[in-house]
Image (cartoon, rainbow, N blue to C red):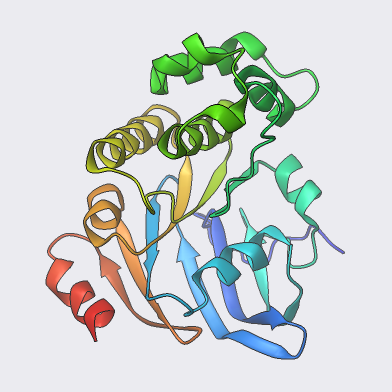
Length: 242
């Protein structure tokens, strides 16, 4: 594998996917998909269930092999890079499944996400700023938190590592509106503070278009529409309601 840049443009995208096909064994889910995520932008990928949204993030992160195409991170080819090395390159993945260590405490879950030598004080300051209630639950087992609290812990853990690229898979599913509002505010604030690039997978149109700069619609493994989120609600709703 080479770290040679895939492109020579002066402003390289944080993430660039080119003609990627991927899936599970012989079952191809994504077909010749191309997608750009500019640095510091939030891009929302929307679509119905079964259209390949989670497969997209798993393919980017390296959990699934690519049949064709290429992926670049800050202009460098990461098509065949495994998940643990993607994490070392500053990519943080919030899976749709609650990927917490249920028997460990809140604090232990956060610390396990930090690389050796990381500034723990800075990480905990991020947690306090985003979700202050978690500081009162540091010794509580993660599995005893409510569903919404567990999702906030997932977000806090991802933000604490100060990722360059954050991949978020349907974080609002099953959450009450007040929690969704809190998550939207946290994501916007942290992007503004640190310039974090975010690729967001969602079915919640209101949440996605509120926090994102641009959107893309995924249908049967292909990007069928996209553009700025401003004024796009009716257009996107048309795809998801058909």
